[in-house]
Image (tube, rainbow over all chains, first blue to last red; front, side):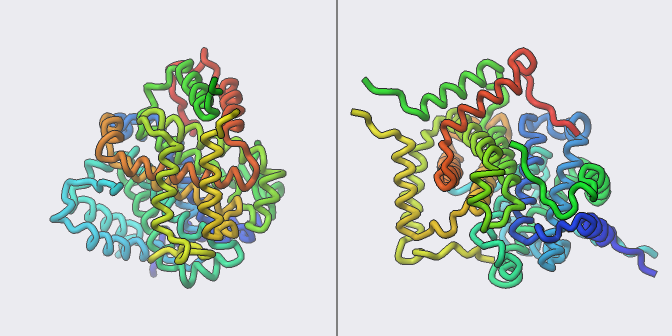
Length: 118
Length: 118
Length: 118
Length: 118
């Protein structure tokens, strides 16, 4: 007997939450990408005034609750979007990692961050 | 015997990708929230000029590949962030849905979208 | 006698606001880009559930106050950032328009929106 | 004789750029808020791997060109949005600063960054 996947269980919870509120009518892919952007903005707000050197410590203390709430909101909106358009997010992420392995070969990028082009 | 969780397998793939490139040094929580915001921005770019009425159809045709790539990037950065600070994203999302159920009771919000306060 | 530029007057107001609160210590360019992302996210929230066909009307009625507040926040953070690093925003925008004129020649893009590459 | 305002001149340049390409049809307020979010995401990308302690220096050297280009894009989209819905951005920013002066009184916030609520 297979135990249900954790992500699938979360999707079921999200679908029920939306269905109870009859919010599907607002959840076309365009609106949901805006929701993701909006929640990612709230996530940015949490650590915007925190110095890099303090970020790990703050993420485990004073800013913990806010971080948990905001990563959750981003994930919920992202999963709503994937569910709406039929994307398997885990499979898409594996596929993207493969493309990134080609785009950023170890011998060229090891230990170096991307520098933007002007 | 329990089969490994799909999300846990994805996390293992992400950790290997980062370790191979020695990029952990850049991945403090502050930088990773910026990465999430940046990828959410790229996701917004995909559908910005697409009309609501065409969004579902486009998400399955001309804009499919770009959507898959961008939701994947958001998910990868979000999981890196959660892994760094020790947040179980699925558990955090369930907890947030419970809070949202209290914040948006069915009898008050059914069928109605949020209106912003000025 | 030259009347002072409107944008310069706004910058003076912003500088005074920050100086009164001794907030310059938090306003390095990295933190301010996060502030811009955060405010752009709040701006996204305003119209996320509004249909394209209603956006113009709503922007002038129910959602007016929220829109004004959020575009203002984005502008304030953007000007703080430019002031910190010595960028003349108006000059930079003219320069970018010139580059965009080359990147998007009229004969190729007239009437057509960008389509994302996958 | 009054010399034309710098911001008004920039608006004229933006309007001409859009008119030449017949892009007004895509520029309803919803699409333009997505464009702002998308450009703010690109701005976030510029400094995401740069440490706070190096941000001022990098913003004037290696990352200068990218920063100029991205703040310009945010400003252009923001001005397009304001122009579309009839918001005077400078006036809106002054008004928001007045509200922020009430929301963040000097005696309470001096020298202290906002901490997020959980």
